[in-house]
Image 1 (tube, rainbow, N blue to C red):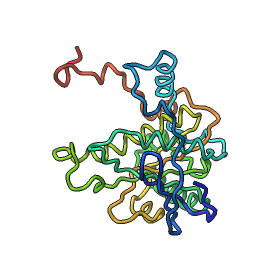
Image 2: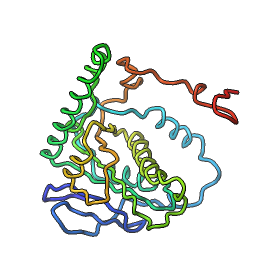
Image 3: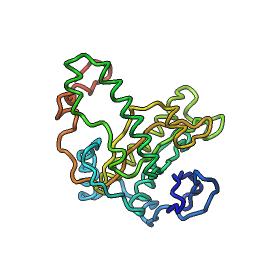
Image 4: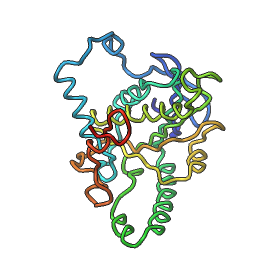
Length: 261
């Protein structure tokens, strides 16, 4: 996975145990994929044991959209591969696996994207009513440079061919599949003590050009990924008063929408 040229690296699925590594500067190299464990593909019982179950729920509850807590260190290669492997194991409509992951570490490319995002942050702030602008002002929206690693998650709507099983009447399930890969990545990173921050203040065309996406491949997310000092116990948007969490009871309906019990 190391790239001595300093170019970004794109990981594409090839087989369960091997992946192609495409360098932005050209060429492909075969490289071993993420570490495999025998029990990863073994048929399990109906439930994890109690400690394992607790770990899954702990990661879900601990997960945060990280902005200001990155240590400045770079996530190590083996941990990054484990996180990407978790993402690549996400479910997908018709087993289409429409995602790819472009790993960005070049300082100039990180700085260019950070400057672009800063412009969009200002534009958003300037369009807010004064009272909302005041609430928004102290909220940090990215850790692009501080994290040291960006993962651009992309979506290929043509992946899987012209007849993707399960997508005929709900075409959005393709993008939903890519988002499931992001959720897998996020939870695996949390379990590793690695923070993830999803950046969405950008022009998709700019990001596509920045990482050299071919026609038909579109960016779904820029994820800032790196070790963190801590995970905040309360999400930033709640801490800063932007929006409170909605209770579960308000989101659950029975039989028909609007029926709470």
